[in-house]
Length: 293
Image (cartoon, rainbow, N blue to C red; front, top):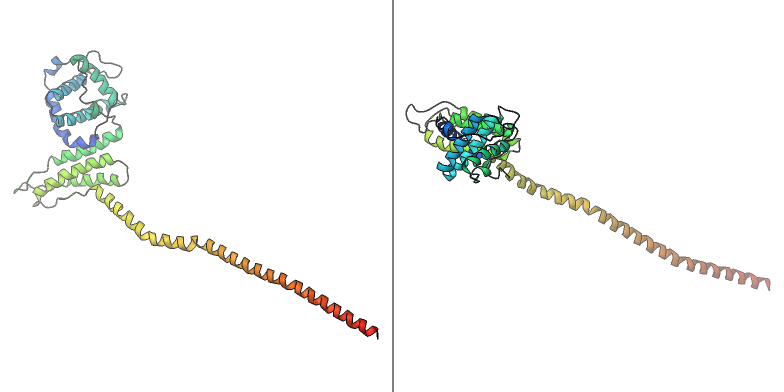
């Protein structure tokens, strides 16, 4: 059984405040304790009937009343709730998927239903993911205080959302966490769209920059640097890679000149020896003729 094949949880944090309100409305109903029973739960894994009943009630509501889009966001919230309410407070449980599977066994026993509606939307949340989801939630909780229009007396002077966003976005330049940065970018889009209707409000940051703008600048800059560097690379290659071949040609040329000089010397030597022998014979003949007189 595999989990977490869907989108990252960061992409759904914007809907968590609404999901939380639904969760509390459903699970605070006194009738749920009479409808759901957590019999057969493995007490060695989780000994918490109250939260088990809340899980069953919310999941049952998702399955029967939730639309397809609400179903996904509800499952993502349930994923976060499992860690926030149970694992974060009980460090002996390390994986969200284990806890989810245990509750699902109880749910399947009650309803004989093998259709795991949240299966593809459950991922193992660790402390790092949990803290980043909390950061995004903090943004959206502050964003609830932002008015939807700039009517007289309806402006606000709270830059808390922008300040938090500007702090969080710094991490996108130094960590490799694209999913979290995409979650930030989703908040940026919602914030900037709201600010269009608050254009008369002063002392408030009207536009949040995207983390992608910094990456885009780097993306554009790299090919420019490469283009500017190509002439220097070609000059270097032409100057230093042709030098050995030029040196070799010069050595061969000098060797050829030496061979020619040596050959000329060899040709000159026999002629000199022949001239010397002729000179000796001439001298002997002169001496002979002189002696016979």
